[in-house]
Length: 369
Image (cartoon, rainbow, N blue to C red):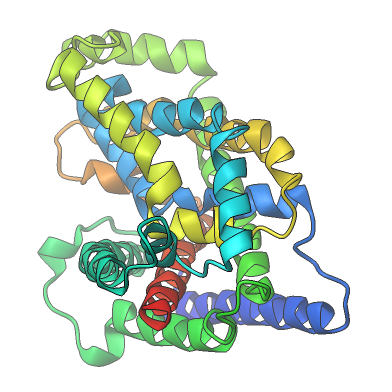
């Protein structure tokens, strides 16, 4: 039985593990034995791109648009093919000019304009705050759903909670403390946030493991593989259109093109992506591995999106369950307590990774300008 106290304790234990990993990485760095001086750690840190939207929202989008979620990941894959030239040049410029943030980088290209740097900082901070709030809301909503186990009730039907039960508030406070401790102590370009990067890489593994676990369970546990699941989905008139690459997508070709272009820019110039790809890079050669390893990660975390979406639509045909929660509610509906708890931790990883780097990136831009 999943009690509220158990879920809270495990959540705090997990956050404590992140603190321990970050502390260990910083201690190793101080001793001259960097933990993040690895192309694998660098590639995993780039997976901060996969936020709570990837973990929960991509399934929700697939449940309404079918393959319409793909441009969010096709774009980065196409852009990464250009990293051999583009990212290398950005890295060299940043190291040469001791760049500490995206705002600093843009300002340095236009005569080190403090005004331009300040403007970029303001725009980035205003843009990132709602995104951070969405991550915290995802944590709060998934917690609210999980504590109702074995019942499945959406947060909107449960009502307001007290400050003591406001998961988003407590997570935000803990992550703010984490960022202060490991993400904002060094603003020199020669010094890296080793603890923060190590924790982000670990979180990338956790969210991937959690998503693959629920995907395998739905595909091979509830159904007898991809063929069986897709056959059940294709037999439903409302779901059969989702198999068409463009017919089931709102906006058709134009929507795909614009989402792909937007995603290509996002993988390079979102503050959190610039932070981990450029500022935290310790060796230019790590890009060689990331060029193929990061797309493999994106493929792995998306291979079960459609199966989970179809599984959720088949399991909850009346629409009473929000499609964004299928990743969590499907294990709950099948009485898989441990899997549901793992999914919650995976969603927590996806959300907190973005929040930590987002906080650190904003602080770096504020300090730089």
